[in-house]
Length: 201
Image 1 (cartoon, rainbow, N blue to C red):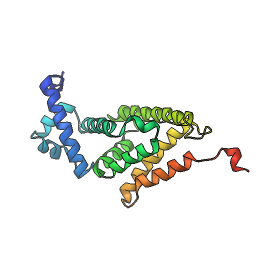
Image 2: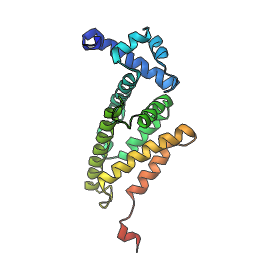
Image 3: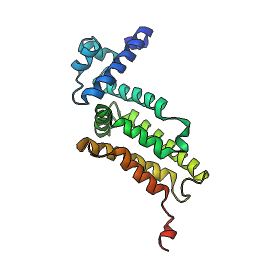
Image 4: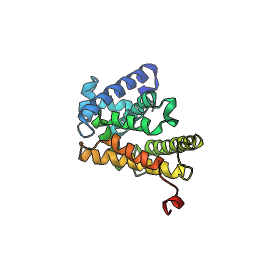
């Protein structure tokens, strides 16, 4: 059955729901954003809300996709290859202003490891794209002489994603942690790390 969301008015309504739901989740968090709460925010019944997305999990995926698009416009500027550490730190600092979205992302990452989960494909694609982008940026930095040549781009990309996700998890337990500052310390250490042979001298 074709959902109403495939028609122009349906597409517009979906976008309205996603934008409003993003605001709600950012304010009340993952656990607080019930279907009823989200439906009330856009003037729909619970069944009416789910008609556009099929499930709460699908709506959450679309919320994160929308957030990614907004973040790309704001933080995905062309200077990210020149000052990648600073660009990522600014994105992380922004995340600390929207704890509900951090909670949503962390919650889905934990739940969606099963391929059957509605968010699994989205998160897998997101992780793959992030690692590829970081690896490319590291190569650009190396070509410009701003990153040690012995650093392996793909390996750093994997570790960098782990650092970012790990910082978010720790921050949800302890909001006094300055995620952006901690990330910059990690980045600056990697950027100036001597080659293995040099460390033995």
